[in-house]
Length: 465
Image (cartoon, rainbow, N blue to C red):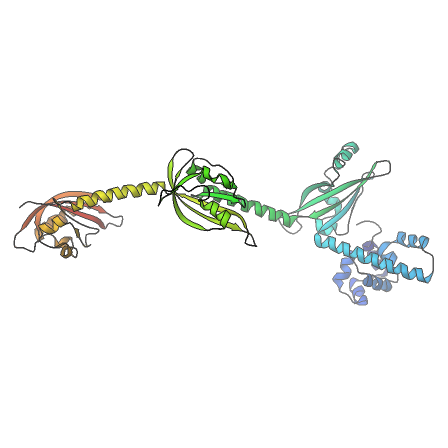
């Protein structure tokens, strides 16, 4: 604590008069914590100062400002009543302004300090210990990282810019495992001969700001990783339509990227899946989102990538709006469905081939999805069993074969039960609506599902009569 300060004078008076904090608090009708705060450097209001000085029987100006203030007033102010009244008025205003300033410093967690270049003395505002969690000497090395510089280096450092120098430092928090962070700003003052006298500075608690910045950086890091790893192409444009970002999947889909302006979107080549018409620079969902605020979902496009590959994508986009619903950018998402389209084409080809085989007139075919499912038969199979296709659609496998043939089928099936799929030949008899027995040779194909149920039985029959 600085010498000749209000807290020190107050504590000295209490010791001399052998007064407790409770006795003082009761005398001036305030709480004990308020009096205790004054002894630790807390601010005191004008009315409370007058009441405290009256109770302690001392001059209130001396109590607050010390001997120098009294001496200065006695030397500079004539002793007449009107001037005395005016003097008290101005002193009260000064105290109120000082109290407001100190209150603002405490609320903002700001410490003011001075460092004498000549004497190396370091002093600070009365709230320094409360904010730093220790006395000013305990934070000296953090507060003055330039203290060991020689005069020439110190002057050069603090005269290199018209602005005050700024530096950060951190201290262990008093009651937690976290650290408190501060930013300091200092300015070097010179005498009339341009010799450095002292440095005045402020230190501001930026712990909350630091934690917010760290949280923001962490959030941005997570967001970047999400954007980099999501299995869809992501594009972001600003309010003018300039492409600002494309993630790695977008680069893969397009064989590279071009961060172009809205007018150059035509450099990306694409054709509508349904019509084959070129999209053009304004047809992309990203362009429509930026220009018109349009939300688009699931539009299928065939593209020619910059690497020459032909691909098919699903594109969707949404505009980004501010609190006034003004467009500030847009996002487009591309999903590569080239493989799915190729599989679809292959499946269609297989389906077309199967449809051709199923409809051919030479071999009777019947199939079902499970052993207990209903049959699907072609015209030749219906002809062999002398039934209509409609009648057979309500039957099952066991309804097709006579009893001996059914037993042979089940035996063959059991012998192959360990296999995921199998096929075998079987000669037997088909049940028929006529008296004539239909002798057939069956080629049976089946697949076994993971749950051990049978799936897709196919009977290709040839009449042996």
